[in-house]
Image (cartoon, rainbow, N blue to C red; front, side):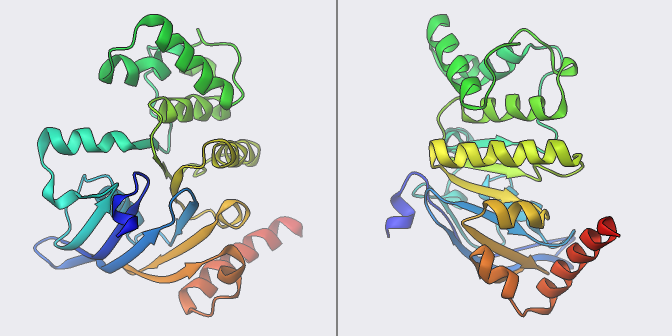
Amino acid sequence: MKSETSRGAVRLENVTKSFRGGRDQVLRGVSIDFPVGKLTYILGSSGAGKSVLLKHILGLLRPDSGHVWVAGKDLSTLRGRELARHRMVFGMLFQNAALFDDMSVFENVAFPLREHTTLNEKEIENKVTKSLSILGMTGGYDKLPNELSGGMRKRVGLARAIIREPSILLYDEPTTGLDPVTRTTVDELIETLKRELRLTSIVISHDIPSALLLADQIAFLNQGTIVFWGTPKEFQKAEHESIRMFLDAERRTVDAFQV
């Protein structure tokens, strides 16, 4: 199947996952095929299973049943170094950017190249500069993370995520806990990478405004199952009770600020 062989393909087939000896079932037969080269938001309330789903895509967890296909490989068949090598198809932006505090902007972005490639210093410099430039950073490469604003730290984290030219880019709650200005900045960065790189991008979030603004497709996870899959416009019209509650809560928040 084409979705299994494409380097940017991610597909889950009837994935289940339980914890505590089966007493806590988190994923209940999740099947989803992420469009190659498109941006997909996975929305859902806290505890819906979003983070567990992301860990399956990364191969950090193995399903109790079902399959997780990433770039032509069933992750359940991979072990050790083979799995580690296959994860090279991913770039990842963590919620807090996860920068090394004692490394400069340049060294943070260069870190994956130094660890996983044999590039010389000139080649590393060119790649770091290119990645940072895509995200609007043309200077300040010698600064430490604690000298950067929240938005700038996200830029550096994203530059590091794309430095090895991944085919799949994952975002873990990229706007959670951010002030409105920084959240807008992060949305603009996600939009920039969507436009410039056309990667298969998956965003784990509960940020409805960002999803409606940026997503090509939205999946809604409720109690371990995908109860909606479609465009942002279709999502706003969805009749599932959990989605209506989710959207209504967002509207009440917006209305409160308008009083």
